[in-house]
Every structure is written in structure tokens, then in C-alpha cells.
Amino acid sequence: MPVRRRFIGRPQILRWMNSLANSAKQKPEYLRPRRSALRWQGDGKMRFSQAETPRIRKIALRSAMRMSPDTGGVFDALLRLVRIGLGGRFGTSPPYVSWIHERDFAGAVEFLIANEHISGAVNVSAPNPVRKTEFMTILREAWGTTVGLPSSKCLLEFGALFRRTEAELILNSRRVVPGRPSRQGFTFEFPQWREAARDLVSSWQKQRRGGA
Image 1 (cartoon, one colour):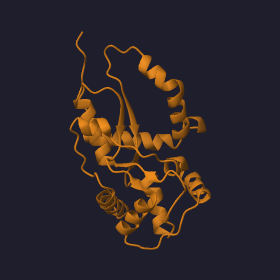
Image 2 (spheres, one colour):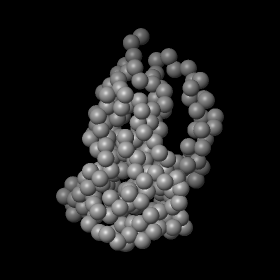
Image 3 (tube, helix red, strand yellow):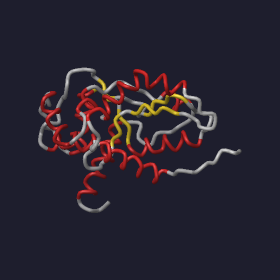
Image 4 (cartoon, one colour):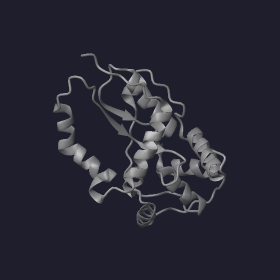
């Protein structure tokens, strides 16, 4: 029996991502990102690799923080800190922030669907991780401010609780690079954080003005 294929385009991927993000806010503690990641590093990874799926291509997406202008996301939370003057250094270690613009995330998923020879674990992140201090400096510049007081771990955790997100995503970001997508020819629209931050701030402002 031939394998049935259904094409999924970038608009559908973006809608799926937003729907997934919204539903994640309502999940109980044991299903939140950090705990899910810990389970994956445990027996989840082994079960994934050992599962026999002769008619299904398996890909495990290991994504960096997806930056989008939508309300309640990671970028929205970080920009809120910048807007109230707290967009300085946050946390202590690790020093790098791995990120990816939402359009590149959708493009990477589209790329993986189209290239059927790719399977297994795939890192989905922008090719240029940024140090935390530089990350926030660039975000402040994109917003048009120079003031940025440091944000403590307690403050971030309090804000995360209020926003129903995970402070761990911000505090414990890792230095990740997209080895396989880059080697296979995927081209990033936003490889640098500076250009991505400017685009995201502009999109965030248009959404709040009702222009998007």
C-alpha cells in the first residue's frame, strides 16, 4: 500500500505552532516544557529510537526558544521586561541564548517535510546563538531604549508565573546550533538576532495597533 502524503504549508505550520503554545499554558505541571524535556532525556529518547514505524518517518525536533510577537510567548515576556526598564542581564549561567524566529521555525519544519531522507534528532535553532548580555542589549536597541536594569531569577520566576510560561526556558537556555538543517541546505531568513529583534518588535507593535 502506498504511503499517503499530505502537503503542509507554512501558514498551517504557524497556526499549529500558535495553537500548541496556547494549549501548553493550560497543561498541568508534569506536562510543562522542562519536565517534558527531562522525561525525553530519560526513557523517552530510547522509546522513540526503538519504536518500529515502517511507514512513518520519525523526526525529533529539538527547538531553541521560538521567538514570535504573539501575546504570552517568550519574546512577549522579554519585551515586557525591556518596556518597564528591566531589560538588562538576566540569570547567571549558562551565558548563551539559543533562539529562532517563528518564520524560520516554520520554514525549517517545511524543509524537513519536503526532504524525506532526513530523520532522527534535528536541532532547530538560528545559526548564531548570542550571549545573554548582548541578546538583551540588541532587544533594547530594537525597542529604542538604553535603560536596562538586571533581572533576578526570582523576578523572572514571578513574571513567568504571572504569564503562565516557564522561566526555565529563559534561565537555562543552551548554546545550540542547527547542524543538520544547515548542512542539508536550509537557508535562514533571520540568521542574526539583531535583524530578528527588529522584525519582531515591528510585528509586535503592529499587532497591538490592530494593523496585523
